[in-house]
Image (cartoon, rainbow, N blue to C red; front, side, top):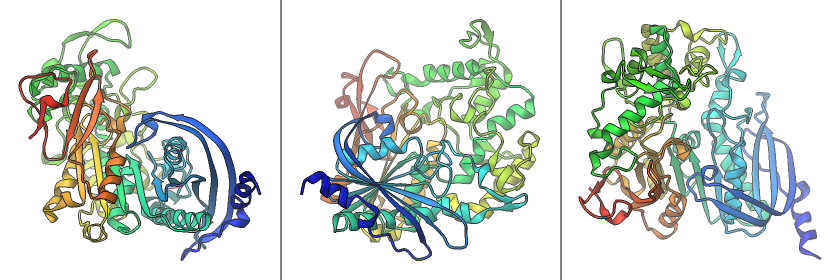
Length: 515
């Protein structure tokens, strides 16, 4: 019997045992054989890994469709099972308001099978269209939140993805994976931390990068620039915000002793955007000279200062200097004004607090925003906040986890991840024995943006830690900054930071210490 016939026989619904899970009814199992699959996966579509050239891979694509009886839902878990298997499972996460099986998933899963991993992704029963639209599922009806779907998105589907993926591996290969891993960034990073918090025995290693944790605080903080602009009734041009970011980098770039186009020493940056009001510059959007408006400076100052409530109490950390102010949180509209095109209206207030899909977020005042902030945390934090620092069960299970976060992330505040890691550290003085955190100066969200370096060895470092006990002290990165030079640096294990020795080639990691 030829190998192709054997593959066809094994890669068929009749040959694959349907997963058996408590509270789950399998509706269908499909299996499609792919042969000689080849694709180029760029690094930005392969979180925590380098770019990879996938060549002539044969694999079985198994999709399990299931429901929770009585809930009238349909969830899909897609699993790719390569013929040449390294005896390991690598589950992949979502992005935006999608749990997975989105536009990024083919890259993540292709990268995994290209290295010999079996891999899985789940849609949690939601539309896979990125970045996701909770207006399609957040409410059962006006005034009634669809709590079950939120629970499924937040955590339930993650457990089922792992159990179904492992069941399919067992059925297809005749044995369990020797090691199981999770890899994700942003929403996928949040999912990784949720797995460590709620389901600590499912994965041996978790790469949870730029995690969207403190979910309610994060989502609402993205609305703050819009709130300020609405109250000032003025909307700056995108070029104003970019100019202020450029000025911040120029002001603070040299604080670390090296001019390389990024801010490495964010703590020492004292740039004041208010000082730039009425400064003249060439606007790339209009091609004409203009001056910085008061609104642009106030919005930038608020973004770089943090969220203060109406009593001027600091409630939430800031975005770092150097993070784009026209990124995902401040996307310009067709007239190049900094209107939050992607996340306006405030879905957290509209759907989960007002519970009214027609609620106009433009009517939100500062006083209303303060109330929303507190209410969302009280009602939903246990469901999707993903901020529990008690990782005792994950530690006891022998799990290992690595998080990295770009310090110029324009969507998720790096300082929120710092806050979480400090909270874990307060509970576990030996936190570095099972959880390690790294920050990358100048890198934007998940490496898509910014000019700093995105680490490409995160997953390999995680695997070496899990399987060989070799914990990473640094993660190497390469970047160009805003110069023509190629810089090689080592990201330091938090709380250590890169410090220039004062002499030596600034493009070489040997010229820096972790201090």
